[in-house]
Length: 351
Image (cartoon, rainbow, N blue to C red; front, side, top):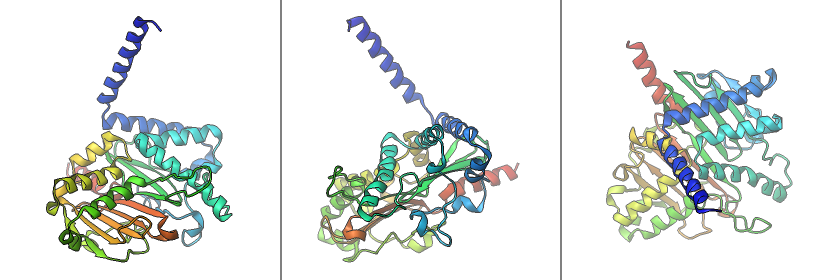
């Protein structure tokens, strides 16, 4: 390749990076609305009947992280499953999902889907199916008031809400992993949610004896995340906050705690995370409490949570010999964009 061609290629790359830096949350929301509309336009009437719901409906908060058979009362998950889509529609569905996630977040989500095949081979259970993940759209994509979507199946629930055409909410956000560490077979060594575990363990083990006394609630971890599939999580249930306050950590420990929170936030597009952080205490270490329960060594069952006035992060790895992770990010007042919707209607009705 000539030096002239190299210069042109390099210049084009610089242009691409420059335009990428100019992307705003509103531009990304427009892309998302376009992706959702393209998917919906590809569906027939029966498929649309499964996929589309009113923006404010009972189904909006009906989220789950269990396999279909575990959903009460009838073992049915709402939405349009990948299994019932054409090849073209599957591509469009994944295109929509990718508009809400970062590159790493999308990779993690798709890896979670792929673990279903490993579980099927281990258990011989046909319910373990990477095509039993469901897409739901709430409201009309691009609606200036509010709309949203959900992509969900076993160990994954992505809930994105858009209010006023420009404000984004991404909770509840559930990512799980079973097996957390693939011990044999062609994918031996795979750790799907490794950062969520390793950073937290590094943090708790870095604590002094006095700090651990404050941070470690129990030698035994709970059997699962405490909030489970609650439609709303009350801050009162976690008040006063337990664990060690961010203010009680030294600089290196504070960096670890912040990095751990970022692992959860960075599953989503950076422009969305920036917007959420700007209106909240998401990355304010002084506002955080970190609590741990269970063993400190790898392979021992463990649990932790991080909370601020607004947010709660929970992680549990106790099942299947501490090789089965559940992790969730919740907003006490803003799951499913509830706080943004409330502000919208208050402002709208006051005019």
